[in-house]
Length: 251
Length: 263
Image (tube, rainbow over the protein chains, first blue to last red):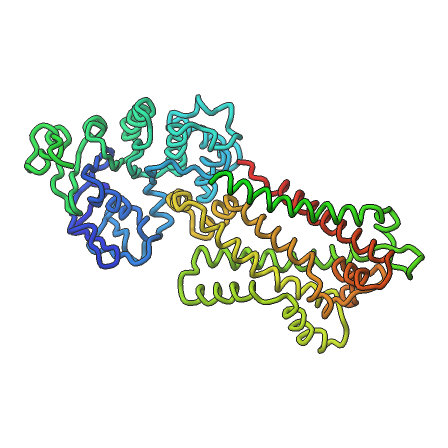
């Protein structure tokens, strides 16, 4: 079943067209990797899925994005509810200037997901557990989130996103600023999380795409060049452009 | 290069120490408990600045109560949604107000409030001071709030937080220390203002807590002591100056302490 269905999506920053006529279906409980050279529109694309581009002035969307069959760009859509359902993890970890506990609790509190204090504690613990961070932080929940290492901060941001119980998680190069050990932890986490969530991940790292994803989409110059199952993409792609990129002939 | 900048830094700090040292030298001998609690008395009979200290704190408190929240609100507005024509006008007005000499605010409030009411009052004085504070707090708040990383706002938006909650829960707390610095600049500035108070709160020789009556204040009292022909009063002016500087220092430390960033 398709969780997200995008048809003929184009996106403009003022006069500049960043995405050209993208059509792509994303099935539920799979990991979809988006690869392509810098500036090809991968990040812009995933930001259209939770309407994060709304925050940028002078932008325009054409075409349709359906999530669970509902048009997210329709005037009737509640953006706040959409963003709760479609969580996001950013390229650079961006914890709030709060304690570790409060970072995870914030999304729960603003969305009033908890019944009482005990329930809140439980949800925070569960989110940190799901993000494989609980054991490292359980004794220092009231300390500043900025005291964590880069990899821990990024997992905290993942925990924060998981805490509001989204259905889709968008990850914009979540491991690009991390060392190999921390990256491996994030990757294991991604594979783990797809049991419960649909995950869209942008990455610069081709090996990473091959390791974690079920399907891969290759973007270039704002166009979707190829979208296929990951094994096929990396062994026998349909497009020669894809093969050139994957084998490192350019990019 | 390092040498030149270091020399400049020492030069500036040196001048500052010179000023503070001179004031302390001239004023310290006149400071006593009586001086701090008594009202002014005729020459030769002692007298102090007790009512002026209380008056200044009341004037400053009222002005801050209006000026700081309003300034923070306007500054936040300018940073978060002030990119349109209205924001540009507000910003221009705030910039212009910063450049207006403080005596103009005094005359303005004098014409608008004092003349109509027919008497000098604490409220009029506070209003004049608040008008001076608002643009200072506004502009510093805007600059500081702009510095909060976009990534932090997006992180909160992505969790389903509405814009106003992002501003309230994430952006303002992150900018807290900087906003406090802006508020302190405004406080330090108006605590030393004399001209606007001459036309509004006027001054008083007595302890007073009524807001519709003239009110004593430190700068006006210093002014009165300093322009007198008496040596003894000149010494009192120096001592009062020292106390005023000390008050600003104490307020500064208190604000720093209470708005310290925990995380």
